Amino acid sequence: MEISFFDVEMNRLKNQWPNAYSPERIKIFFNALRDVSNYDFREAVTHCLATCRSAPLLGELTEAIHVARTNYIQQKRAEEASMSGIFSGIPETGWADKEFKDKCMQLLNDKLDKKITIEEFYQGCDLLDQAALLYKKTKQNPFKKPPEKRKDPYKDDDATV
Image 1 (cartoon, one colour):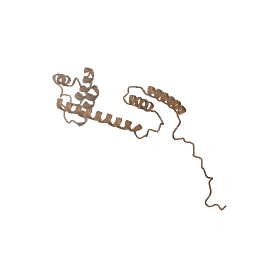
Image 2 (cartoon, helix red, strand yellow):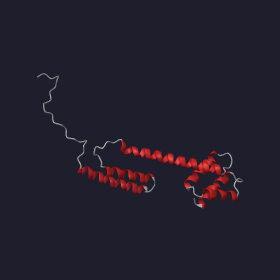
Image 3 (cartoon, helix red, strand yellow):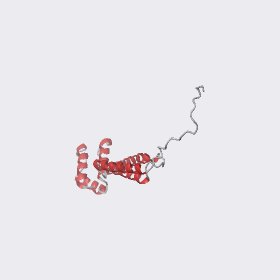
Image 4 (tube, one colour):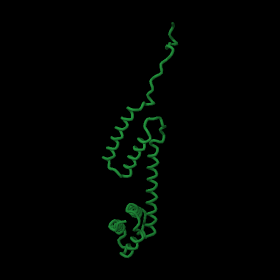
């Protein structure tokens, strides 16, 4: 964790409990929590501000960090589970090849993980749409089979001959 970020978050706690944190205690906190990510520490401070009646000590902050990490992991698992269901229920009928589906999922995951911007996501979608059109032109669509011709002529049961 960056020390400037740590100071900002500790100031949030000091604003709530002005007399609780001496400079020596803050040094102890930083040395104990220096390997915690900025995100986890911010979430832990927010959790403590919301739930603690008195100034949280190192034990409460550590527990709040554990809660923040657990919540983050559960959120990521839920996102992954919802994303994995996009193509899982579709049978392999040839509507798209495996590489195309993998590229779609990679693009979507990159957007969700904020590795790409929204503009890059839209550009990727446009490229995938163009690739899908080319694929569609070169491959027969298994869903559009020509109708079978009837061998015997249609006769109306109610009509009299």
